[in-house]
Length: 382
Ligand code: FNR
Image 1 (cartoon, protein in one colour):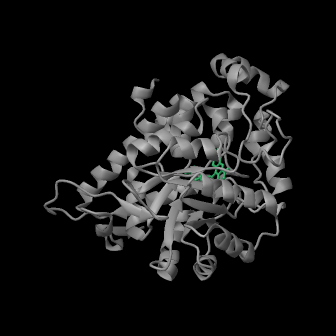
Image 2: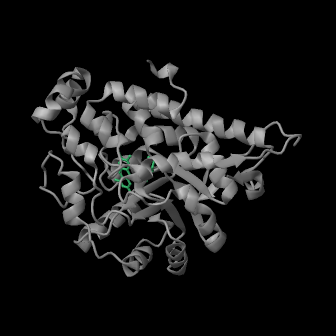
Image 3: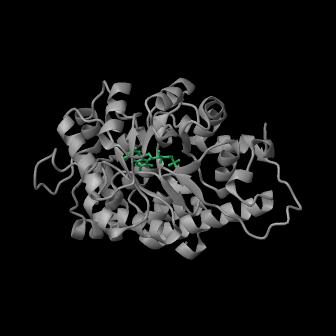
């Protein structure tokens, strides 16, 4: 299978599976515990049917949305994800290039593998930095200052990760970050010599956005799980979020809101957006899917705050369903991560372009000229 034969997320997934050693592939692909939430995040979209309006007399559509202070040319952007240079040597550069090309936004993780400064200088596209509240407040403040300097548009505070999720696939495959040769992983690295030689030859990357907190100058990244469990403030509260909003003073999203009450609190403390998200099923298994939870949240706070749906999106029609329910925009991780692993920039660009065409075609077939034309009465929930 080649890149040109990839048309849907699952095609990129298959190519990524071929190209990556098993521990790395399953790190992207896997979820927490029994992966019930991981599966439901996507399958829940099948419980919602689209009911198109025909004879609308349109021959083009406007897919643009305003989110976090910027206009995006499409209503789907790239969620922040960790460790991207493990998947492909280009890492976050591939996202920055794609966002520039397609007029969308990209997220950068605290555990990203390219620095806030490098990405800020490289791309004029809308950029969101994903931040945590650290035990060391100085570290959080320094990240905020670096984002300001590098002209990031928005911060997203991730609130669903006060303890790392139980990712059993990682135990089974011997996945560690950084990767270590263990008896279990050795065979997989040996049978993927392209990835392994490339990694050994040039991938001595660090995690530049947290490097102040780990051995200065060390090129060996810390273990992600250890970092999450040790460095992040477990007792993070609404006061922490409110303080960060004041400190940043710009567009601000809270990522990982699932309940209606929490959505209301996000409005109360002045957040610009919530990202309804269960971290792609990687944290609390059994957590409801974002699309299932969306209508109740829209009914409670729609119009008071931007609502971003993050999780399970694999098709343009998934985006249309969320927007018709009242979401402001959608975002996703694996939908571009498999493509990154498969083919770097070319892969991410192809995956996001295909999704863009699917959204465009879907809007035409739904009889909707603009995103505002997508209404809840064009959906039937089974
Ligand atoms: C993530 N996600 C994530 N979220 C975050 O706030 N900080 C992070 O560092 C990461 N890292 C990360 C790594 C990998 C490999 C994945 C798959 C996901 C979660 C991400 O932002 C997003 O919420 C989910 O990916 C959404 O689900 P889908 O689109 O992957 O189904």
